Image (cartoon, rainbow, N blue to C red; front, top):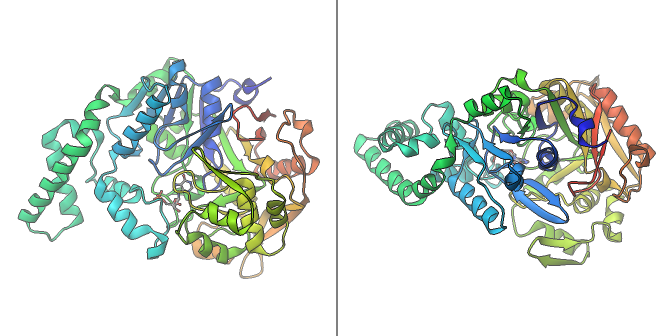
Length: 490
Ligand code: IMP
């Protein structure tokens, strides 16, 4: 039995991450779309996301569009909900790439109420939030400033582009909000400049997608009433949620089922099944902020914050691992003896780099080296509870740790007072001071060709069951490789 075992009778499924993002939600929603869903919708974030899918060895990455776009030709609908912030230039680029690859985007629908990321958001973001400038290390895509204007009620929505008068009015409000003491004549001057840029670079795109712009919430509710099967594709992860993450080291939307449902215009009660995606038995974080189970600790946070050159190439050179440049990126043997040696070293810095190279943990959007550490069951349980039931856990990238002598899972934190807790404190200051209490498991070897649960190594099965018991949710699926077909349904 395949995907039916995972989805059961569900009609609306949310695919969300129980960590800091980059857990493989793109693979899960690609799988759901290709084999089950009629419609896949995004409701949060923008082109800060990077969803990767590998089908028959071909790697496809999308940033704004949901993974379902690759199945448009098969009659599947893709929806960008009103909770997103959309950079139309990025969207146009992605649509062009889709067309170049011989694929279609005829069934793409975009909410007229989605907010736009405009050039000044990107300027503000790179100035204020880069780690080099003491910021939280955002993706630099303008996400925070666009959401800030939305919440301040001065944001520009997609529908404003089709109504020149309201566009001028809302831009005037935006500039007055951003520069409260600026005299009117300068405000008008700035509005003129913004309008000229928008007319030149953005309005032609708005015109070209006009036929796809609809009241997406209403359409989705109507599809759900008709009994269509819907996949809600989360972006980022619960620990990066503006509501439930490690604020202020978070993104600017609520990455949980609640934010996702609200962002596509349906009640969260419409969701019949939550798929809580957990990278296992290691995890990653990109950007600044506390990460209790990070291998090598704060030194590795500082190291990963440096934004210079191509870090993958540098790390491969330092590790003396040979590689090739290809149109798909840098290609190397993830099981190189040198990488395996590094993975099993006791010093944090070597082991951290070894794990990153072994699992290829470099940002799909930014190319940044991801910070890596052991799976944190305390954080996963908190995230799982916030996302709700019924829920099944989806373990991803389990094949990546093949060859490690041992691995660890944190089931509690030791607090500075000396006592231990199984609760996840979202206060970043406290979270930086906790010490994970680990259970250590023996390492394992995998081929990546395992397709039955019983074929998985014993210690991996034991650790997944322990985490499932601790979190209180059953295991639904184990992903044993990047390819869409490499899965075990439990
Ligand atoms: P922003 O979403 O670009 O504002 O970035 C805010 C924080 O979220 C930063 O720490 C980013 O590294 C992180 N972040 C945003 N998008 C992703 C993602 O898709 N994967 C992992 N981290 C992300």
